[in-house]
Each structure stands twice: as structure tokens, then as C-alpha cells.
Image (cartoon, rainbow, N blue to C red; front, side):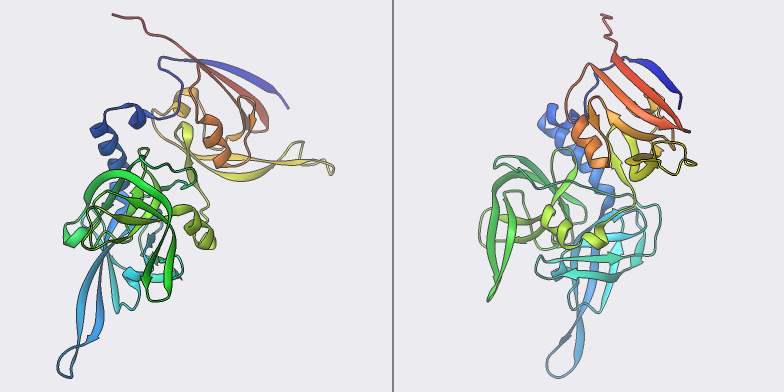
Length: 331
């Protein structure tokens, strides 16, 4: 195995894409909303009901959802699609699709809807671990039929429990003061980075801005089989997936195997693009951190740096890419 070292100078600071955390309040909200807005859908449905005096009819309902898979998987509340006679999913670009419910978890009030579409914009699922009261959050949804409405506020409390029906409590709730109304249900609650940290689900009638969202971590655990995606977006501007590789020549019966992140796509003009990362590269280390999963890469890159050292395999050879900051002193 040959080893190559590449030194690349970048004329900007090497750090995670935390612009939203450092910008003014308005820029933070608009940037985060722009990331998730294209993946937020409007769900409309008809519920069969008995109408006076003896006939049957349909009552139209509305809700929200989040595209979490580019091939048409939509996350929403179970109560949005429960008992529906039909579900229509409306995208921000004007297209509409008939949706089929493919998974439910009433205990967490979440459901998954499949639509027949490809190459859809998706929202990144973050984590609800270590959320703090006072933290900025943004809700996107379709309250009272006002489609793709953005509201912002802060986390008021975490790990709330709320009785929603007689004998049934919802747990793992995030209390927020962002405005939530009927029709927001199933929509994303996002942090300042544009990551989904919860699913908006309920408001307290008669109160002033007391709303709740279900934490995303229990949802990911409950619907793990459905939510498991082959690819996910990771820092540096790449999309990648966990994959095993051979440490030695494949003809060696005693070869060892390890796991890295296989690069499947690269965002144009991203840091990875500037560094010369290529599709098919296997990332195995970032600085001193071993990389075996896209989440490892995210955790290792979540800090500022003046230099980044990336270790990867390319066509059987080991490549070391060292990126250094070049300070531009032009007046």
C-alpha cells in the first residue's frame, strides 16, 4: 500500500458550519428555516364521520410532515393520519402525491408516510440530547391552513409529560414558546443549525405560547427499522455511509477488516471539494479521531481548528490530506 500526503491551503477559517450560531438572530432563523423548509410538507386528509341525521360524510383535516428520505419517506404525527380515509402530501414546489401510511407508533404519536417520488429534499435529523432551556428553536408547519409558516422561540423546558387523552400520557416532550397551532402537528422543530430535534405535536388551548414537541431521539429509537438510511449527510460537505474495507490485499486469507465512511457525493465548493476529496474515497480518520460512522465524523469536526488532517483510502492507497488556514490580510 502506497501513502501520499497532500497539503492544501484554504483561505478561510477551518471550522464547522456554525454560521447560524454566530450570526444575528434573524440570520440564524432564516438560514435554518431555509434548510428545512423545502423538506417540510403539508398533509391534507379526509376523515369519515357520521353526519346529522343519518348520512356519512368526510371532514377535511390538515397537518404537517418532514421528508427524511429522498425516495419519499415522510415523518409526521400518528394523530395526523390516524383513522384517515385518504392522505395527500403537498410539497412546497406545488407537487402533490397520494400517501400511504407504512409505519405507526401511537405511544410516541409518530407515523411514517410513503409517497411515490424520488430525489426529494430531505431534513437532517439531529439529536434531542443535552437540550437546554432558553435554547433557540424554530417551528415550520401549516397552522390553520397557512402553509409553510415559520415561527421561532426558545425551549421552555425539557422532558415534559402531558396527558392528552384519558389514561394516556405523552412523554419525552420539549416545551416551547414558539407559536404552535392546529396544522403544525407533525412538522419539524429545529435548532439553529437546521437540524430536526423534535416533532411538533400539541398546544395548550387558552394558554399563551405553551406548545410541545416530541423529542427526536425516542422517535429514532422507536422507528429505527424505518428510519435507518443507507446514506446521510455529514460535515465537510459530503454524503457518506458506513462501510467495511480490507486493511490488506483481498487475496490474503488472513486480512483484517475495518470500517470507515464511504464518500458517495460531494457538495460543490464545499470544504471537501476544496480539499480534493473524491467520490469513492474511504475516510478512516480525522486528526487523531478514528472514523467508523458518519456520526463519528460529525462529532470529531464539531470544533474550530487552524489545521485539519484527513486520512483516507483511495483505490487501495493511503492518502493524507492536511488543510491549513491561509489568512487574508487585504485591507
